[in-house]
Length: 192
Ligand SMILES: [Zn+2]
Image (cartoon, rainbow, N blue to C red):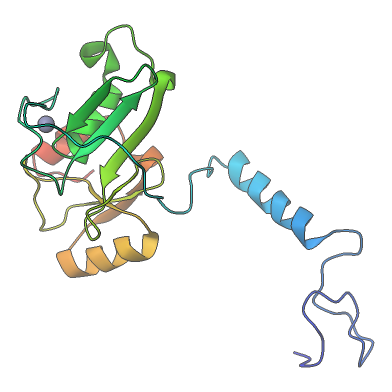
């Protein structure tokens, strides 16, 4: 490859051969927008990483609506849903958070998922609450939560890969890849 050819130049100024640049009239920005559009058409519109999210912490009397356990004793696992009307629901782990989301009819009759303002899960390494939509979830690892096998949340793909290597994880899933059947399968030690 020509070393003097600047990146993105349509024609190499030193040698006159075709450069590595984008077609004329296509700015880098619009090319990137095109890539983003292609991504969203493929259903890949999830954030590339999970940003920290500010949510209320569970109080000593808050219980998980799925299993009934007190949540406050498990600060490293807490997941939280904040509804637009201010209602806050805490879980003792991402697994029960997903069970709840997949069965709102049972747990929150009359409420729709679109009425949720924010959803947070706890990052395994930083122990900060991060946006559940952007998180990477590892299943099948040797790290168990308060209710057994868990979806272990990490904020970036790199962290998720590191966790998989350190803890024998079997799969890394994005939010949209968690199926309704998975949380129940984890209870039985299955990871699909
Ligand atoms: Zn629970």
